[in-house]
Image 1 (cartoon, helix red, strand yellow):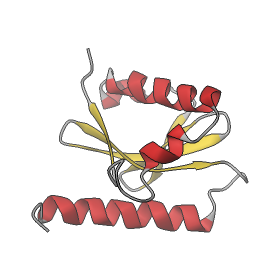
Image 2 (image 1 turned 90 degrees about the vertical axis):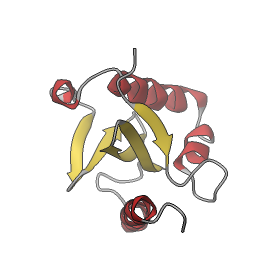
Image 3 (image 1 turned 90 degrees about the horizontal axis):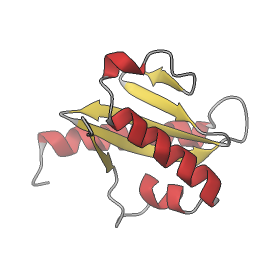
Image 4 (image 1 turned 135 degrees about the vertical axis):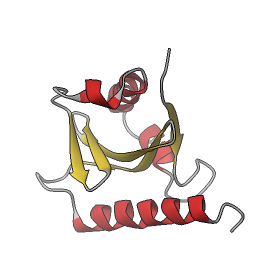
Length: 117
């Protein structure tokens, strides 16, 4: 039974939603990333240690690695909030992907502070 609920920010009906990005990948990569997110949803954060495909990316943002993809997310109030997804093109995350993650994280935090905005 899941401990965490997986949500996407921005929502799937908005531009640049990580949900839509993941759906657009080849089925094998999409399934791999989705399976790993679902595995995390069933474990406590303390039990995430030792997963070779998971690490802290920056601050409170985590990075999940697929075979050819990266998914950045944070945890908040019982949720895994997927902030961005991108295909790997280099060893290091591209600057524009880093900027998108930070912008989505900032917007997510603001949306929590002002839910009516």
